[in-house]
Amino acid sequence: MIEQLNNLKETAISQIKEAKNADDLEAVRIKYLGRKGEMAKVMGLISSLPDSEKPAAGRLINQVKPLLEEEISKKQKSFTLAEKQNPQSKKDLTMPGHRFESGHTHPITQTISDICAIFRHMGFAVVEGPEIETEHNNFEALNIPLNHPSRDAFDTFYIKNEFLLRSHTSPVQVRYMTKHKSPLAIIVPGKVFRPDAVDASHSFMFHQVEGLMVDERVSLAHLRGVLFEFCRQLFGEDIKLRFRPHFFPFTEPSAEVDVSCIICKGAGCSVCSQKGWLEILGAGMVNPKVFKAVGIDSEKYTGFAFGMGVERIAMLKYGINDIRLFFENDIRFLEQF
Image (cartoon, rainbow, N blue to C red; front, side, top):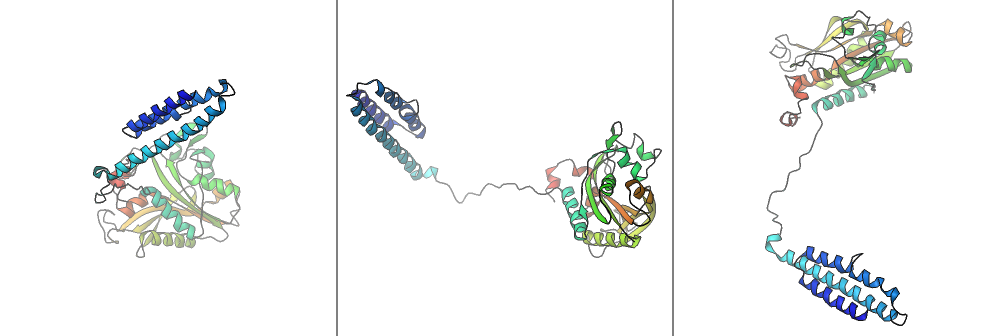
């Protein structure tokens, strides 16, 4: 055993000195000091030695193992020193660094965030709802009758039985009014789906933001004040607002809301078709039939609602002329925002 240990020590030291690089040295270390290495094998034989030989063998093992570890450490330090002294291994601090691309918010996400932030400052809560809805929430509770064109299979993505992909975010208003008592003020962002042919201004999936306020004595004047403040903060101090009579089943009276063209300041240009105005949203006073469907007393409470297409707002704000650019994931387009 003593002779075997001495031979192992000399062979190991010789191979350590002959190692030409760190990989060679690691191979030697594993061979002799690894869990299944030569030293482990020798140590496993001690139990079979006569009792008179065990103390001497144990002392020699306790000398050889630290010695080999020290020799390996010295050799490793020599490799490290040689690498530092090698001119070719030194880093050239004058070389340009590697640029790491940083991501940023998609223009649609940023527009939704901006819209919600404005309404939050005016006291509106941001709520969300499911994208798969029932016919009751999507149509019936909003006073949209069975024979309305929007309930046709050509205008709505029906899934199965009474379920469909919501065609607007208004069903969230129904859900919220059913579960919460008045007064309330909410803003509802989210995806909506309609089977439209995709072109520069239409997509089968797009984003909307709905707004709703219900309280005693809420009037059309409150609606105009809220929307004017929203447009002023989003588009700038010089913005003007215009209401045009319209019809929506879930509001009465209803209006289309225009803003003065942000490109030509109302003078008339190709963006606004020389009209000086740009349509941005629909709005109106909540129809009493909607209040009845959700269990709110229309004799005591009134409210207003409005809805806008996020893509439309983003296109106006950033001067984008094709809705498809938002969803093509062209990095050249997205890097501009």
